[in-house]
Amino acid sequence: MEIFVCQESWLSACTLPERQNFAWLGTMTTDLNHSFQVDPADLPDESVIFGCTPAMREIQGEIERLRSSDLPVLIEGESGTGKEVIARFLHARSSRRNEPFVKLNCAAIPSNLLESELFGRQKGAFAAAEMDRPGLVEIADRGTLFLDEIGDMDWNLQRKLLQLLQDGRYLRIGASDQRVARIRVICATNFDLRRAVERGDFREDLFHRIQAVCLRLPVLRNRKDDIPQLCEYFLQKLSRQFNRPAPKLNPATMQSLQQWNWPGNLRELENWIARAIVLGEEVTMGAEFRREPASNPAAGRQRGIEPLNQASRRVTSAAAGAIILKTLQANHWNRRRTARQLNMSYRSLLYKLREVGVPLRRRVHRGLPPGHG
Image (tube, rainbow, N blue to C red; front, side, top):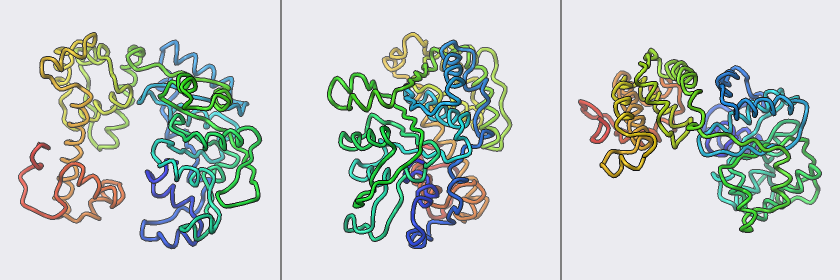
């Protein structure tokens, strides 16, 4: 669970009176275990996750050896290398696979709120605490707690997490009685935690506790032989998502894809595939790759060429805006009907409309707003 990123997950963590107070947010989930379970069918096939790169094959072997173990695992890797997918795969292959998998992004929550989200709170703990509320540790009991971006956790909270890892005990904020959680903890970071320990930013005792096993994910530029299979997976996945046929990438484009450095890793590749499906410009992108050699990504900036990752984000956002605008027009600017048709929440639709610059009220349009055409 990533707090406030998924409203349904957040509401599942509330007590019943709190849920009633927030009924306007939508239908509540009644079965917590089901809400937080990992469905293996939602994960990529093992051959896609691990490919043929020796470093990934080694990680696959380590995960197999961990199947019957509850050792804490630290997953290291640059942003976009697939750390959460590996964490979910670890859970799905463990003895806890039928129990909750709960995610918390430590970088997404202010430090003064993180403890409450992690350990819960007792009624009266502070002015706004009008009732008890369970924390994510409690929700994850018997299952897996995935702490993403662990390097962003506050020093004081690190001490309390260390106690949880040592004996499974924790305190809700404002409570005097200790609780016990039987959980497996998986952490992920794109930081160099060893340097953070040396700087005094991360507790050394906690570092050694969370990295009983350390899995270091390689960057995509070191997995270039896996790119064709990854492209095929993203093409099939995103073509279903966008309800559009998957284009056939020609050999020249595929060669360019394998030569690129991919600073955004798997996330950047997925965004590129999204652009190819929505806009059908894979040949044009292939030509752009050929203009910008992978060995010298700074050269394009010197010649005034927009970096690929920026171009991908811009064009993907424009493509999303085009789809939303077209659907809005087809539904006569009925936003709720549009949200249902696009399989997204109404609040998410409003957020996306603002993000891509699509007006919230009906106007006469011949295309997207300036900058999104």
